[in-house]
Every structure is written in C-alpha cells, then in structure tokens.
Image (cartoon, rainbow, N blue to C red):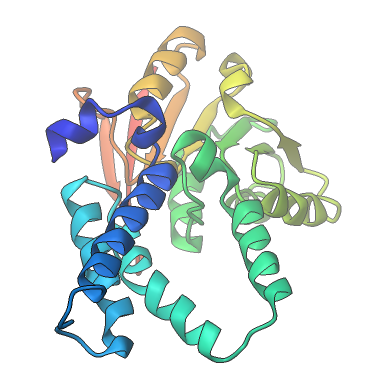
Length: 256
C-alpha cells in the first residue's frame, strides 16, 4: 500500500483527496456487504464498520497520523447528525469553516498546527540580541507564536505569512493591537527569506526537503532555520531542543 501511495496519481498524493477516495471505497464496500442476502451487522453498526475500514485503509496508505480519528469518526458522526435532523445549512457552515481553517492542508499538505507558549519561549532564546532583529513564521496561523515573542522581545520585528483565510483574519486582528507584529496573506513559498535573521516553521514532513532547498538558496550566513517537530530528511540539525510542553515538541535548528 505504501508503494501504491508513492506511485499514485498526483491528486491522490494529497491527504485530503486520498481520504475522500478512501471513504468512497470504504462506503462502497460496506454498501455491498449491506446488500448481501443476510447482512451480518445491525444497521446502527455499519457507520462504525465504514469508519474502521477507512481508518485501516488510511493507515495503510500512510496518511498523517492525525487523519486516523477523522477517518474513524467521520461516518458515525455524520450518521448521528442525520438522525438528529440537523438542517443542511449547518453542514454547509461546518464544511466552510473546515475549508477556511485548513486551506493550507488541501493546497500544500500543511495542516493547521498552533505552537505552544513554551515553544515561543524557547524560540525567544534563539533570537539575536540586537534590536530590530527580524523573525518570519511560515504558516503562522493566528499569529499566536509571534505575539508571544513580541511580549518578551518588543524590539523584534515579527512577520507571519498564512494562506488559510480564517486564521489569517484572526492574526490580522491580533496585529492591529501589536505594532511589532505583521501579518501577510499568501503563499510563503513566494517569500524572500534573505530578509530575516530567524525563520520558524511548524509545517509537516511533506514540505521540509523543499523548505531546506529554499533556505539554503536564500537565507543569509549566520541566520537560523527553526522547525517545530519536523526534521529535514537527511540533514542533521545543528541543535535539537526539547520544548517540554504538553505536545512533547522539539525544536530543530539549522545555522545557515
């Protein structure tokens, strides 16, 4: 299954489209079994059968681990909501909210991860001591990490780039009350990394090799690339710092 995933058509290498295809296949299997002359399960258990099948197929396809509970619970939750006669507008609103929150996941295999306050505290210790140092957060979400940084280092100029609309708008609202926090909407792959002393990323395993190539090509000598939890494949970090938060986060640091 891993070999199939690696050689699948490009759309199916995206976790979102792969998950949709997996659910379609799981549902088809369950409907075929339900149509058998003597179905083996009560009707109420079939959504859980689909969820288990989707979770198993997703794990075999090597989807990110956070897809496991989504695949397992999606059909049972949908079945329960249908039983409650939830108006269709709520389904549409829920889908819209998921798109606005996780646009980057569908577009670039980068889900919404929010850095903890402890991760921000550790990152603060890595900043240059001179006033006016520049920090860039790639995929900054709501800007919470940069907001924490500016409380400790109000002299630092912190910029966040976020493509998901809803987190970006929340970050812009936060930036209105923080003159040292700047939020930009768009694709961080278009950013010029040479302007920054520290570039921070909390992305996913998928883009790390590409990010490393971009950092090597653009970042100034002596600047730092810092990744939360995800290491560059095949490139040992200069330093590894356990954060000690509830997420058991680790910061990986590369000096350019």
